[in-house]
Image (cartoon, rainbow, N blue to C red; front, top):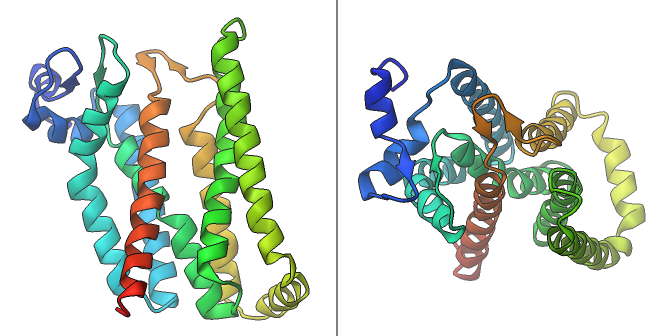
Length: 253
């Protein structure tokens, strides 16, 4: 859509004061600036291949197609309308929220890959632990983006950091009994040429994208980075993928 006239692209963005079903979907694929477009395209073309490689190597190619198609089709309108939860006169555009939905699939896909290839698991423990640990990082990054004078926001963010820490601690305790076994498997996994490098690259990408999506200073020349949409997209990506897999496992599929 970037080659469309500027006025046409502006008409396709999701306006919070005048929301429509059509713009709720099209806004995720509209970019007014080349830098914004290139950033989202670059992230898409590093995240999706990583998900694909982890899925194929972990024996879950079909799950990859389900996750990606669901995010691309369902997330644009959902994220657009969830922006209305915060009352403000503004607009949203760009694919960053959708890309973060794909990033939200990484904790589960990575945990599934580690269990299937190296026997490090179980997935239902490691996937939530990876996700909650990442939320701790997101909370720390986000607290630097709020106005220091806003004590309410700072208090709520500090509470989120504490809640995430306690949740991660709970999962860590549940995995403590397997600590020696996990360390042994990690050491042996280093000998699995190719597979070990893929897991390291996936973890590196996972952490790097979070720093890009939740910058310390969210202001840009053209506006403000929509940290709320990034957070919601990422969280929904994990919740939807993890819940789907758990439900399917319950039915033995």
